[in-house]
Image 1 (cartoon, rainbow, N blue to C red):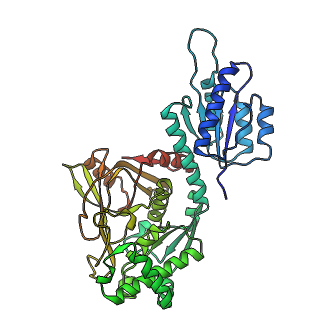
Image 2 (cartoon, rainbow, N blue to C red):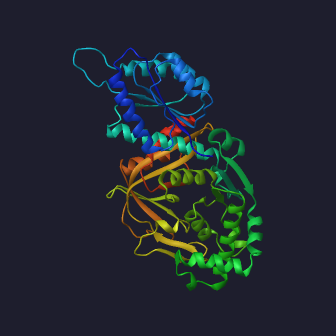
Image 3 (cartoon, helix red, strand yellow):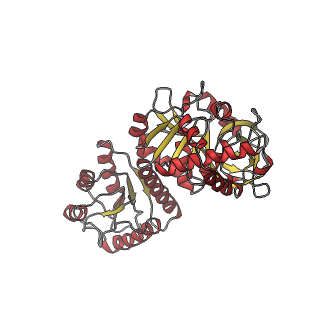
Length: 444
């Protein structure tokens, strides 16, 4: 289903309409840069009757409610009666302050609308300023992204392959909780089913998977042939399953089963799935996979998934690492994504590389509070130009905040040991998404 945004410029006709009209036109033009198909009225909605007529028969995934002039609470009440979607409340800056008449009185209208929104218990985002202000443009863009994200989650099928290893229960998800909070459909399959699918792959399908993998991973042919072909079987089985069942994200059990029962790790197969646009986490961490999905959706780029393993106070960095699973597209160009052996098991293929430099990254996690509710972890930073720090894959993040304080506080706050690293600044959009979902955001 397509994303549908609607612009509702509300007000009354007793203020300075030329000023209001000019800002209405500029606002509509700005919104169309974020969403060309945004539904805009031909004229300002200067009465409840005009608002009512414009809304007749319409539905929306996101509504931008702008006080082009003052409007009383009857306007927002009508909007709430007709639309059940995220709302951005937008106040226009008074265009002239010269000791004469008040041109718009938009701000008072915002207080009126917000009071009603709050009394209805409806979350909303808020921005103050004119459409030509960079801060306003950035804020509106972030809320658009959050609204699109919320809709995408409602259409997401997240696959849980097997169950979490002992001691990794933080990654387990319940289908009812996933659906209620995020709108995500959680589906499950046993790891042995995909292992059986892998064993049944035809030679032709194996060769096709290998051809694709060789174009993404360097050094595959230097590993034992049987392990390479078994990896190709896994890659094919997973790729075929997610395609057939319209899976957008998955969390897969990895150790010990794929080492002991199959003889080849699943790490490299999950890495390639990420590059195919299927956010894939290992160790069956369902909320880790959902975190990766959010990070990838908001950046348009595959996300890193790993543990915080090293702190360097002198560089103000935290290193995130995992033992062999990361999207090949994140690898440094000088090395590329290389095949190697698992650091603990000595079996391959797994991935070996350091991630590319990025001016802006966001460390993100959908986590659980001690009372069972959800929360979002957020930290901004940059990914440094560093080679791999340990066997496996790694990214070194210089955090905007004090790295030592971030680590110490996050540990004391009881966060899970898995985090997504988004290659881009998604903090504002994630904050807005948290508000829309009723999930508190904890910024570090």
